[in-house]
Length: 309
Ligand code: IDC
Image (cartoon, rainbow, N blue to C red; front, top):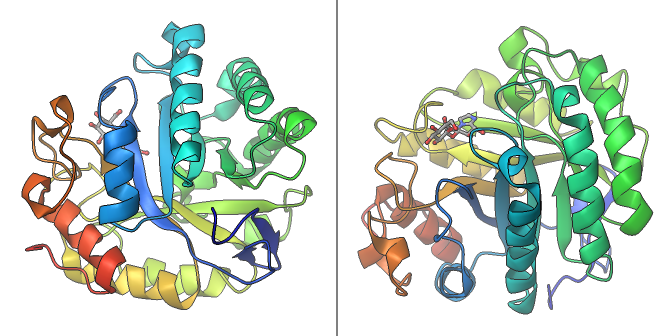
């Protein structure tokens, strides 16, 4: 944040306050209700100083024991973590994590009240990015856009210049998982300023065919990879680091920002920390990391991903 200042969307790029295209690199939390102890000042210091990352995404599930079960408590949790990230100079993405059900309109009122509260708390900050729907599914682009048209004005009431990330059809696949593609967005874009569209990939499931579409779409649309994994879309199974490297090379060339799933210490291969790490205070170095964690820490630090550290 001290280096780049306020962000904006310039053309198809994310730009810093000086108007230069930049790429943010970092991590997504797992569901904050599933792993409440993995994002804290100690882990964020490690993310900033040991990983040399720029951004943390806070995944606030709407369902599955998330926000809908305790809006006051979970909103306070998110607000506290935004403050922690801000104190460390990190960019922070507030992710309204819709997944099941996949039509964000079902959660419209919850989304409006959540974003009204969060943006009013952080109105004076300029390091906060708002992601209005993690992975829309079972809903058309027109349905997603209608939701965006309702939620974005709520955000912009308090945070008029914030960058907003809009999920795309078919689990943020730019429509590919539904047999569509980016042209449905190009033909009918969200009309607010400072909007980016999200694309998610899981490297062992999604390969060269999808990379070709992303390379093409990035010439027309501002894209943000707010979530990706090094394994299959189940979030588990073997890592495919060759595919991940091909993806991250593309994102580097196109200056597309990214956050990897997930900053957690579970038993799935997407967890970057070894089990038990989040109960302690030591989040630094390779010793606390899984292969996925080692790979990405190395990639961010050196430009070369290495699952062995
Ligand atoms: C997965 C978690 C898993 C959890 C499941 C349902 O890794 O522990 O049981 O969600 O809550 C996504 C989603 C993200 C998924 C992830 C891996 O955004 O919530 O996390 N994934 O399946 N999209 C594609 C993959």
